[in-house]
Image 1 (cartoon, rainbow, N blue to C red):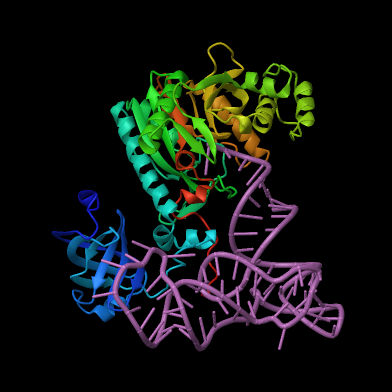
Image 2: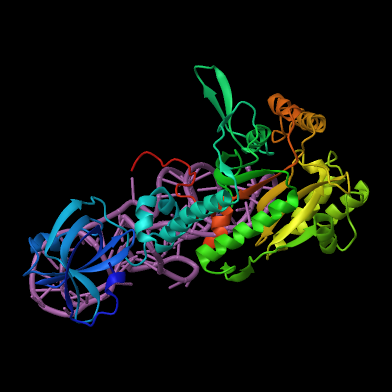
Amino acid sequence: MAAGHQGLEPGTETGNVVSVAGRLMLRRVQGKLAFGTLADSTGRIQLFAPSASTPDFERFCELSLGDWIGVTGEVMTTRRGELSIRVDDWTLLAGTRRPFPDKWHGISDPDTRYRQRYVDLWVTEEARHTFVLRSHLLSLTRRFMEDRGYLEVETPVFHPIPGGALARPFVTQHHALDLELYLRIAPELYLKRLVVGGFERVFEIARVFRNEGISTRHNPEFTMLECYEAYGDYHVHMELTEQLVAHLATELCGSTTISYQGRPVDLSAPWRRAPLAELTSEQVGDDVSVRTPVARLRELCDAHGVPWKESHGPGKLLLELYEKTTEHGLWDPVFVIDYPAEVSPLSRPHRDDPLLVERFEGIVVGRELCNGFSELTDPDVQRERFEAQAAQRAEGDDEAMVVDHDYLRALDYGLPPTVGLGIGIDRLVMLLADVHSIRDVVLFPTLRPEPQDG
RNA sequence: GCGCCUCUAGCUCAACUGGUCAGAGCAUCGGACUCUUAAUCCGCAGGUUCUGGGUUCGAGUCCCAGGGGGCGUACCA
């Protein structure tokens, strides 16, 4: 409606009669004339209510901030030129029994913002903007994937065996089957089963659950885009990632150069690619790789305050060193490539170096945005890797994997050369919406239940 | 998990080194007002200063314990 009535002179009466509905957000009563601000999901409009035209004028003036009302009247502008609707008729659609927060300051306590998102969305402009952006991002992502021949699928959330990532799962119980089930920590193994089944390009926008700490970057349930493409290798998905992110930035932010927390970020493709060992060497000031002797790597860890365990091989030590010294400093997007095989139990060995795998992580603003790799397709090697994980698990590492015999059986039927990718949707939204905390991109973040006395 | 910070009226915030310090604005309630837009003006009311202990002549203020929240760290995405 506002778009259809741009640039009217002050004091215009258009003759157009419209009906609108929304929430009364502000009210300015002036004796025999009242003004109000009505808000709905599309924006705000001023109500102009002279006692002469407004039925039940006194009751109109007594409406509470936050009441839902419907209004019918002529579109006009005030003497000051503000586009308004003259209230010729109105109805109370739903009242509010609780006062709305301070009209200027809004809600400052983050806890009540998260708990009472239904109020926050009215009061905090940025919150509404962020969640609309999130919705558009999901929709654009689906279209992007479908345009490239990917099929959207839904795989189980209940897993008899948690797999596809290294993480502690949530456990639950199915009564009729008398079965312990896990909420998925990743959809990966099911999606690869589908590639075995002949769906050569699949993706899922998957809610996953990890029983770990909560922080500004971690919610126990979060959303991941995972996709798999047969006949491709990790280069294919690096290209897909940088194109997707650049596309989303253009559509949602209007440019591939965006601002995050006051610093510019250039998301335009192509992104730099750099081997993990090379980046780490630069930071550490010494040439390191998976072939560096364990003793030397331990020294370097000590020198940089990185804790290590006896059980860590060179690959794990190198990864720890990279994560503690290098990752957080990578601001503009980089694909860190060629990870140690030791820390990547589901990745295919590197074509040029058996100690490495063809794996990449996309790092933006110092944070991991995505993780992908050429998939391990050899059932024998996969069985060995699972067994190595199971051994670690037996030693008390409850994030290590469990042997998934059905997945191995699927591999026995043949998984073609395939590349897979996982993108953290919440973190992508954080990046594009320029927000600091994951709780600002999750509508109802996990919180401790409120004490039962209010 | 651990470390640091924080908690005052429905909301947003004050109260110097412990000494009439329990206050203001908005919202609510009563009154005035026909072009306001955080409307304005006058007035009323509103609090177990998160909880429980302690130190002190005296605690919102200092100490201890507990609870909520935030940030950092760890784990990860």
